[in-house]
Length: 254
Image 1 (cartoon, one colour):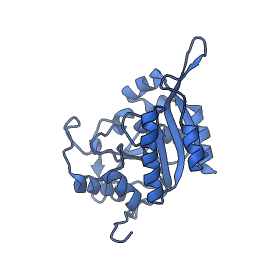
Image 2 (cartoon, rainbow, N blue to C red; image 1 turned 45 degrees about the horizontal axis):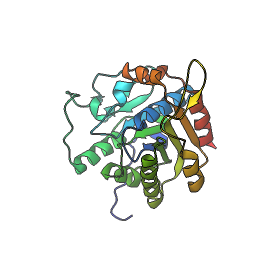
Image 3 (cartoon, rainbow, N blue to C red; image 1 turned 90 degrees about the vertical axis):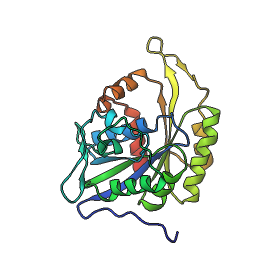
Image 4 (cartoon, rainbow, N blue to C red; image 1 turned 30 degrees about the vertical axis):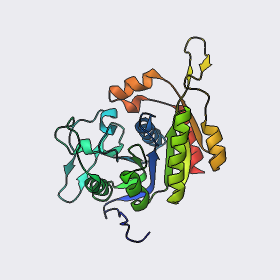
C-alpha cells in the first residue's frame, strides 16, 4: 500500500519473528495469551520480548511484577527485563502515574507504538510478541501495515457472539494479507479437580469449526483455571506452566 510507513528496527536490535496476538473484543484473555506465549517460548530457550500495544489498557508489566519505569541509554529506550529474562515495553513503563487514563488520540497512540518497536534496544530476539488492544481499529491497522509481522494469533472464547467477532478479526487479517498462525480459545472448558468431569460452561467449543473453515491447523483450547488469575494478579506470570502451550508453539514452528 502506497503511503504506509514501514517501521524499521534500530541498528542495535535484530528480531527474527514478530507475532501479534489479536482479538475482536476485550475480556477473552488476549494479554494472558501473550504473556503465556512469551513465558513458554522462554522456557523453550528462545530469546523473547513483549511489546504491549494496548496503549489505553496496558497490563503486561503488572502480570510480570514489574513496577519501575523504563530508562534510556541516551540513544534508545531500554526495555524492562523480567525474572527469567523476557524483555518488555509498555506505556505503563514510561508513565509516572500508572493509574492515570491515557487520553491520547489515534496519531499519538500510533507514534508510541512506532517508538516501542523502532526505538527500544531489543537486542537479539527470536520472537517479539505484540499484545494488541481489542478490536480492528487504528492500532490494528498500524501494526498490520507497518510492522514486519510473521503472523497473528487470534484469541477467542466459546460464546456465539465471540464467534462472529472472531470472524471480523479473521477477515481483517485476510484483507491485510497477514498470515493467521493459529487460534487460542480461552475459557474453553472447566475440569473439576475432584472428579475430573469436564464442563463446557460457555457452551461447546467453536474454534475447531472456524479453524477448518479458514484452513488453520494450529488450535489451543485453554481451560478455566482460577489459579492462573491468582498468579497474574500477584505478578507471577512466569510461575504458570501450561504444557499445551509448548505443543502449540511447536506446531507454529512447522
